[in-house]
Amino acid sequence: MEYGGKRILLPGDLEEEGLNRLLVRKPIECEILMAAHHGSANSLPAEFVNWASPQYVVISCGRNRVSESMKRDFSKARKAVLRTDRDGAIQFRMREDGATVVSRWKIEPW
Image 1 (cartoon, rainbow, N blue to C red):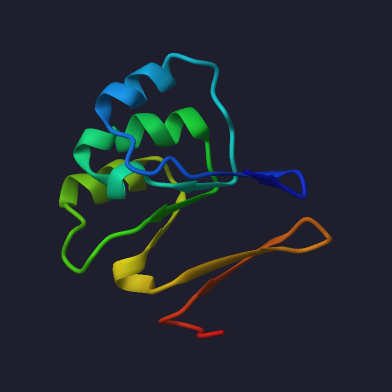
Image 2 (cartoon, rainbow, N blue to C red):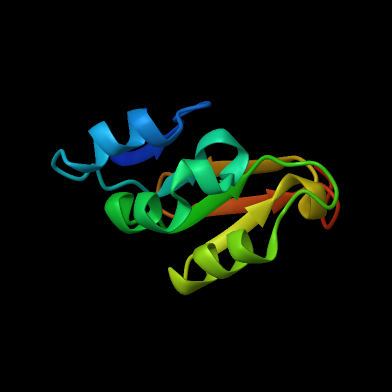
């Protein structure tokens, strides 16, 4: 999805086989990346983040569903990682001046 010159990549439940096919293609850089298949190990989190080069990674996950290896893989990429278990609903707003505003429900309800 593209809006205001910014890309958002929503891969859904894409896992290892599909991701391997995707990762050999030319990268699609995006500002916001929803972690594939809830950020599971089968979704190749480190490789996917390196391929897409997002500024923000969103992991849609339940409480205590983020493994230590997943945290490590995403933090190595040095991206802003937002998690629905910790942050609640996450809202991105693209302003006319090009800035992206991020709101997290559990911290600043809208």
